[in-house]
Image (cartoon, rainbow, N blue to C red; front, side, top):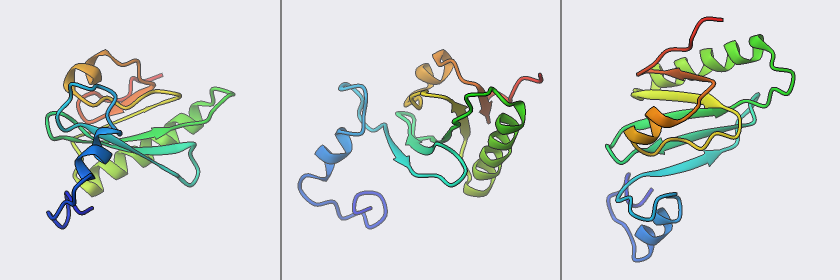
Length: 119
């Protein structure tokens, strides 16, 4: 918050953000894992390219298409309301922190650069 909202980071803030990166060579990407109501979890990622990516982890052991459709609708609403560029949903799927990771990940569904395939 101090770094991105107040623009007054304290010593140590950069190191704390670095802990949120999977790639030690990344300069600015990080992911925040949040608790979610009605879903296993929610994720907000700032990518290397400066994009905001929203994610939902869906806990759906029965592979219910209704649950996936609901998650897709919620994610679409988040992207639209918050001005995100993309969103991704899956189970145990780490959020992409760059365009290269976005292209390579095996998502259940996507919002933004790729839409959910019809079933």
